[in-house]
Image (cartoon, rainbow, N blue to C red; front, top):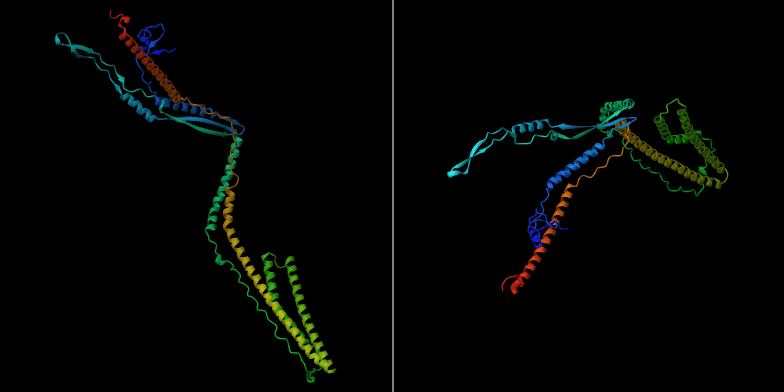
Amino acid sequence: MKSNWSRRELEALGEPINPELPSRLNRRAGGGGKGGAPPTPDFQSLADMQAKSSMDVTQYQTHANRPTINTPFGTQSWEVNRNFDQAGWDAAQQAYKDSYVGPTEGYYKQSGPGGDQGYEQVWVPGKEGTYTMEAPNREDFYGPEQWTMNTTLTPAEQKALESQQAIKQGRSDIALGMLPHAQEAITTPIDYESMQQYGNTPTASEFSRMGNAPQLQTEFDRSGIPEMPTYNQEYVQNIQNQALDYMRPEMQAAQESLDAQLAAQGITPGSEAYDRAQRRLADQQSRDQYNALNTAMSQGSQMYANQLAANSQGFGQNMAAFQFGNNAKAQQQGLNQNALGFNNQIANQEFGQQQQIANYENQLRQAQIAEAIQRQQVPLNNINALISGQQVAMPNMPAFNQAQRAQAGQYLNAGQMQYNADLQAQQMNNASANSWMNGAFSLGGKLGGAYLGNPSAFGFGG
């Protein structure tokens, strides 16, 4: 049932207009006409209350999440401290003392006109001593809570941790001592000019070519028939020496290359591997010398056979002498061809030897560069190995179920909702008042019209 009514509504219903008097409908007057807007809530105060509630919830959650943890490895505990602003407290205390106002004495003052147009003397009592400002609250001068987590290990774990730290410190000291050497190695540039230069490009060989074929004998000349031949040992020796002259540079180069290879591999003279390698090279060179002698002997024997055949044919028949001349030219052509092939083979071998030397020089240069780079990197790698070794590790404390944050008081929302409810109720009250006023005016108009048409109905007139 409606409990707030305007005076006009109560009068129309025959109720007393005094809101303090009881009525038969248990109604009270809420004032005449439309009501004013409800008072606006103090949103700043509500915001401060909500902020304080949120801070209290956070502080409660922080306390809930600071348990003491005990494990076989040690203990993890918390302590809280609050800094006190002593200077601010002292200043507030002094300001409070300075705000004291001492007591005052009473006095008389003249009031309005008294008898015979005089003035009445009125006694004004004095005031007791008081402070014009509130006493400071000591709690207001404490700062926010400052939490400290403490981890205490068992004696065995503490000793193990100190040992690990000592090892790490020792490794760091060694690395620090190596730092000057590493700095010198890194800052010293690599001298590429002092290293083995790149090998030269091998010179292309110029191969010999065969000339025109010899002109064969077409006429037999008996005066050209030689005498009975003898085996020419000097010729054989010359052929052998010629072949050996071509072979000696290659043999000497092979010997030097083998010596350099054995030295590079660290095989020293007198060792079994050294003697075995030298024997293999000596056997190969002996076979080459034997081949040269065999070739010379073959050529000497062939020359002897040719001369013998020429002699036999010279004393034989005319055709035999004629054929001997042509055979001799053909054989000479073959010898020239063999000599030309041998010379070209030597030239090809010289080209391959030059290429091998160039490759060896290039490999030697790359090895020297790699060694120089390694000299720069090894000190730094050693330092990195020392400082990136075993790391000091703390024992892991077990996890626990942390307290969840509670919801702070929603004072702002509550104030806004209450204000909206009051405002809505006031709007409904105003709407009801408007409706009643419209009905009253309509009724008054009808009664006025009836009175003007028939005043006697209302007790007026004859």
